[in-house]
Image (cartoon, rainbow, N blue to C red; front, side):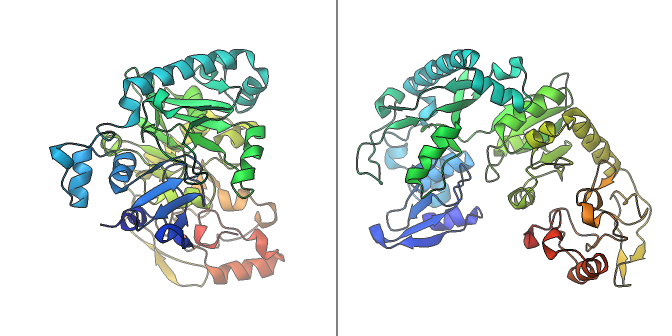
Length: 431
């Protein structure tokens, strides 16, 4: 199986970027979510992300992306393991080596101390709603550094961009760690504003928001619930995960994916099976698309793009999660037999069992009702007086698309700018 097939099977689109090295393809990174800095060389069977540093062959991709062992990855690709075991350098992911763990813990200790005295970073995190106890779980790297790969137990590599020996880049910024049973599984840095600006110099002006330390595993940030919480909240940003856990950790376990391309491991999906899951992903097209691949109900914040935005606008994180759990329970309650109602065109449509009725209509199942409020009516001032929701009712969550004829009728009726007719949940038509 070609490496391009494996990557595209994960829903990652690739397009031809150059003819060098037998052909170069580009696309969004499956690991960090970077939009166009992921490169694939089909003839060489290799990939590399210029943003997070993820790199390797088809075997490494399956190990990092799917959490497979070396043998399982070989089986999936239909190749024989070398010498009956993984070859040198591929025995285990980098994070399991003694050198990597030693370097990781040293960096964690140093950056956690730095964060205690560096007020700008602390104020930034407090501005996102985090308290001192939560902040103590994070770190701050005050100076960008490039370390030898050997210090992290990583094999020598050449930087494809410069042709020089590859280093472990630790940028200035907030250090986020994934730790389980005393082992650091993953280290990721959210770049400081000045470091982000500098990164534009070698990313065609786009900049890098996050950088992952090479050798990190694929694990997402898991923050276990307190007091026996069984429900789950899945968010995109790790910093948002800390905020939700801080405010509602007794109600939900929290999983921070790191990006919309991140996903729970197979083991984590088994743990979540049968539980109530709120998909608190960002309120944008990427968030809607990611929802289609995850179990649970989409529960974005009532306002703003993400939990941090919502908090900064005065929103109550705990009340938002509580409302999501109440609605989730209500949606599981038995409903009356299916009935039909007319849509905006006067045609009959069927309502389904097990769906929350739209409060303003009483009988129409609405996938855009959040906390008892219609997002469509409440979030957009000029269209707050719409007499009917201009959506095709009854579609699955994440699949709803605008009823274009109804949109045009409502636009004409209220004299609205077409740009305002952006539909929550209609990523297919987002402006």
